[in-house]
Image 1 (cartoon, one colour):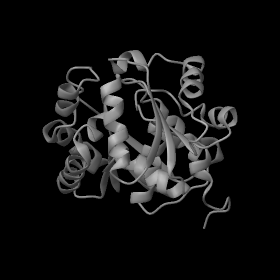
Image 2 (spheres, rainbow, N blue to C red):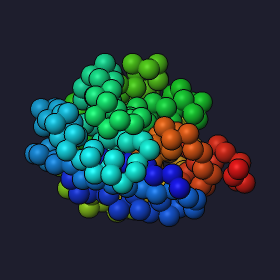
Image 3 (tube, helix red, strand yellow):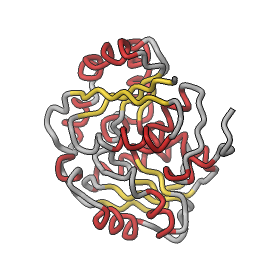
Image 4 (tube, one colour):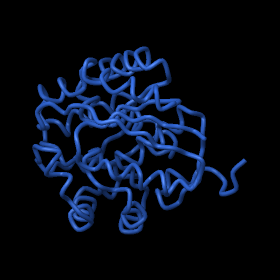
Length: 243
């Protein structure tokens, strides 16, 4: 059994995680601890507070007691808002506090893009425009070519969490770009786990979503590879038959 730990801010799309655990179809356990979201606002000052070391530290002990082998801060905006160097420091501090390998959803996107071997991406963000541009800047710090950035201008994670498949498909269609090799949907408050194959079929290209890449990143940290086609192209890089 491989136990994966996640620190998830507040309550929006956390039910994606047990769904992903089921879809992995292997000896993988997903342990999720909620952190205090503070002010629910996709605004730079609120996001910096949400991702502060003190807020993340609170949930770490519970994951250690659960036997987690790796921990991921399951928040994109609450990590990339610090910039590349700040997000690295956030992860280093989390790893030292937890006593285990650590990462964040922002770095999960970077590593997933590398895994797919793509360089040109489009972003479909639920955030306001200024926050969406910070995510694009974060990706560009690693040499990713962001060809377009779409913003829905939503302030709260609570509102994003109410979106269903129609809104998700509309976001994907409206955010895609013909030059993009993959579409990135960066908000962990967005329910996507049940819809990734439909999104990829609709667009005809890989789609990376926040909760999907977060779990993939935890598996990477734990040195586990799982073939799970229902979680999209990212999870088909390994043979179906597992060792």
